[in-house]
Length: 166
Image (cartoon, rainbow, N blue to C red; front, side):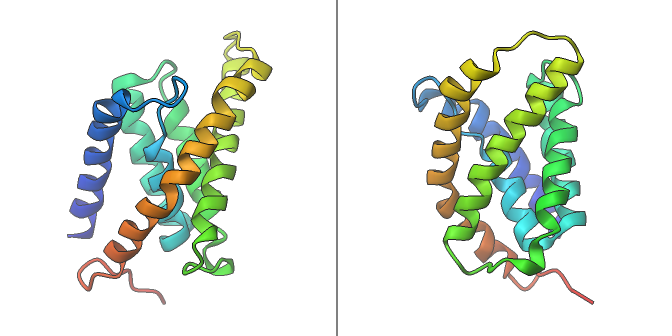
C-alpha cells in the first residue's frame, strides 16, 4: 500500500507541476514541488527511501521533460540520500526544518545541474542562473514547503503507511 500511495503522490505532483503550476509562475519561475517532496520524504524516512523516491521523481521528470536524460534522476537521488542521512539528527516537528532543507536543496540542485551541464559542455551562465532562477525558486520552494511538509507528515503517520524502524 505504501509503494502505491507514494507512487500516486509522485505522479499527481508531476501532473500538477507540469500543468496547473505553469499558470502560477513567479517572475517566470515554477516552484519545483518534486524537489520539495523528495526533501520531505528524505527527512521523514531516511537516506535509502529518500534516494529511492528521488530516483523515481527524477526519472519521471527526465522521461517527460528532461533535456539531458538522467540528470534529474541522479540529482534527486543524490539529494534524497544525502538529506536522508540527517534524518535522525533533525527535529521533524520543527517547522523551520523543511523550509531550511528545501531552500538549501534547491541551491544544491541547481549547482549540481549546472555542473552536469558543464561536463556535457552545454553552455550556461551561472551568475544569470543564480540571479534569475535559483534565488527566486529557493524562495518559492521555501514558501510552499511548510504546507507540503504538513501534508506528508500526516500521511507518514497513517497506520498503513508508517515505516517500521529496527
